[in-house]
Image (cartoon, rainbow, N blue to C red; front, side):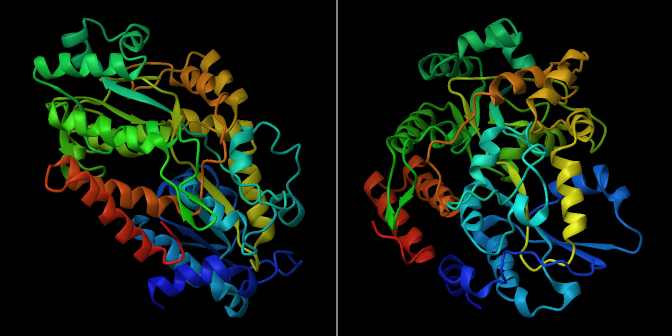
Length: 435
């Protein structure tokens, strides 16, 4: 099945071809099929849940990279075949992230967490409301739950802060980067001292994207929020003035700028970002916690924002509903388990109560040089909300606008040509969208 057919089928016909979202009581299966795009949830599952599995149950993780909608396409093909699939081949659990969550939230391919899976409102009472809002359908059904929340911040090198700003104290550093004007002033200081403020073109993108007032798509019409134009203007300025190192998010060059001898001052992201993405890149020797590991700290930065998040959804037609219920209860509702995840994995968990308990215990994060990041998370997570600025097309929109603008930032095309290239690419990916 081609990419276009898969996307079209899943956006327009998934609700018709998938099995009913009303879970029927059936004999529990012996294979638990879980669809993921990386090994983040796999590690959480193995480390904090796997010991609870009933004897004889095999877990099968089907992993496909997220880039260019590859994961969605793979998952969608499986969901479209769900009704006729053999019991041991059915999708049981699958993960979604914020950039395309709505596509599955409003689909009959996902089960109602309360009515079908069996959790109660009391079970999820401590979860942050925004994490439930994102996964609540137009019919007011909760379609997924998460162990994490994603308040994000500016993650900076302590040693560079001391060298250029005279301090690495988070409160004092925050005072110098508390808005974009101050942030740019520090960028100029960094450049004069032989450093770059950020690694690449995309590092600041989520500050702007998460503060959009409008979704990228309304109906079938593409909408460009003013915040995206602000990101373009600011990133062009950073590029032209040498305040970034002209790298691309997730590239080898970008990752190298987290190393001990790198000259980049800061990155932007939430708990999963510095635990899952930064900590390994910072090490000179994998698993040794050396290199720049411990030479970092986190502050709010010039704007409050969040980034991403992973939710687990139960697939309609699963024959493992009892296990799924226990997975959701254990990993997303149980305070003791959430505290273990926060302490051992560095995650910002989906419970302000758990974060406050950890902070009160004197917890210090080793990657962040002993900073109490749980206090930072608790303060910033409580303020998170979503204001109708999300669409089911956001992964593609984000990838294409970032990709198209890199040529403009590098000076190889005009801004008008970059926008033309963006619209051509996005309408090829989503033919139903209009400019």
